[in-house]
Amino acid sequence: MHPEPRDEVRTASFRDLDTTTLYAILKLRADVFVAEQECAYADPDGRDTEPGTRHVWVSHDGEVRAYLRILDDGDVQRIGRVVTAKSARGAGLAGRLMAEALTVIGNRPSVLHAQAYASGFYAKFGYRQTGPEFLEDGIPHVPMRREAP
Image (cartoon, rainbow, N blue to C red; front, top):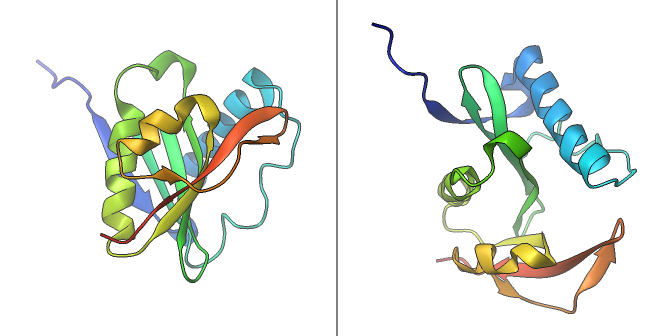
């Protein structure tokens, strides 16, 4: 009998990502943000490669199923590009990613721009809305912040 493949949460800097994983991450981001949500934008924005950026993802049997990145903005850490594959939604993967992200962030404050419908999800992790709703790529977003614990 072979063991059942499990979801594995991983964290890496850009230089520690292998090319297969990087390709899978970029494909997932394009599949959801560009194709599914119809947001035409340059996803590779130059920040993925910054030394302070951390990539956090969930893989299942080698497939990247969910992802987020943490940017070092100096005084705060910025969570972004939070994405779950359509086939993996509802399995709690985003919650596992956020828990890992908060471990990586540690005792520092963090911010994010939540799609407005998901602000309640981020509130469960201590994020509070800090400004008015705004449109980004035609999708309502709200700025949110979590103070250092």
